[in-house]
Image 1 (cartoon, rainbow, N blue to C red):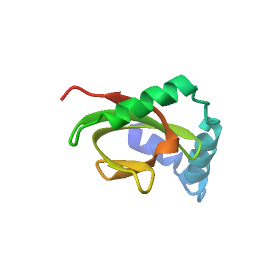
Image 2 (cartoon, rainbow, N blue to C red; image 1 turned 180 degrees about the horizontal axis):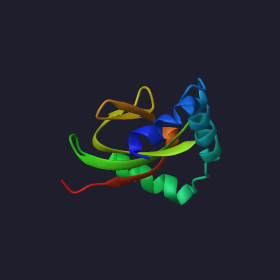
Image 3 (cartoon, rainbow, N blue to C red; image 1 turned 30 degrees about the vertical axis):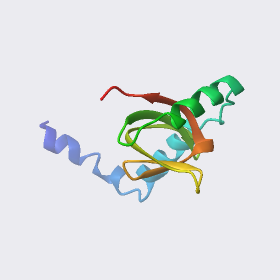
Length: 105
């Protein structure tokens, strides 16, 4: 049996509306984690890094959002009034930052 004919026999399974989306959501929920605690020493170290950043300096940040740790890197802009930073258009609350590292330009 050639590949085309063989693939056709499985086509009815694609007709299950929403199956792929339901599987994707189930997988995402399975991977969720609890937010980790940051020690005072680490928080102080991250504060020093943020305070000493220059405009246009590049950083790599690991942050927590909606049950997942995510990573972003790029040029940073600090918004003290709103207590957050912006990396290439992505806005991250300072309280969500788990790790920050300066990148050599």
